[in-house]
Image (tube, rainbow over all chains, first blue to last red; front, side):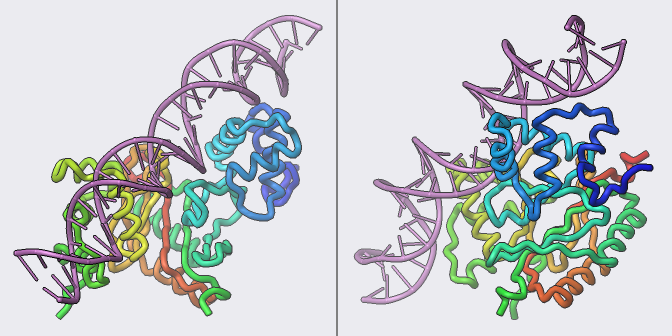
Length: 148
Length: 148
DNA sequence: ATTACAATTGCAACTGAGTTACAACTAAGC
DNA sequence: GCTTAGTTGTAACTCAGTTGCAATTGTAAT
């Protein structure tokens, strides 16, 4: 019985192995970091956390692993509207897509699922005959605390 | 009687002037390019077009002008899912927001307006008490021609 | 028109994010 | 335990965008 794709520990590792991809010491560390992250991490943050586990892990390996995960649709790449530099943030691809709202004052990032959001995607697929692989909906503005 | 914000020629220039911002030779050229563009341009493309009009215009001035327009909410910055490098693309902020669908095979970019899209934004504003300033909805996948 | 000065520009040098070539290493199948 | 294709680390690179600063210029007051 296959584990559900959702909160299973090591699900990224399982997903890669099932695709016949080699599991290395470095990849295991990086996958673990992404899976257990409590917030959206950029490549530099992932590297910093990885180095604490294994000081030999290299920047380039982090980028290569992120590229691998992206190609396999296992992580989503976010901009979060460049609140902090030009880099990208990563999160495990969720079972159901969500939007990201970034507060342009305090930098807080909120996630939001919505039926309407799912329905817009359905509309695009149908009306535009467009086969969706990634849907990135990023909103910038002021969060409830900052708009006061 | 003020001109409508839409298709008025020189609307960007008018908008900047009405905010008390200086109009320079270089800015006029860059604004004109953005206003008359038939597709989404990145900074390098804008520079190349600008240099054809005035060979002295500098890369830095293009970036500074784009920053100015962004800060004033007069242009929107797009990623188009990085089909082509890491750079950004720019378009005049439209009267009504639209999504961008980028074909990951042929690179074509389509725009799409939708009531559902407007309604999701309304839902975010209401349900999350989030004041929206920018909404970037970018979709990647295969267009009708490429999915065959 | 002339002046005055803050805003803007161009240059050069820089930063930060991500990529590439290549030799050394290693996971996984026999 | 071999073998080898896939992976890693290093260093050097590219590309996008930024910064400090001196020279220039738009605009408003005279």
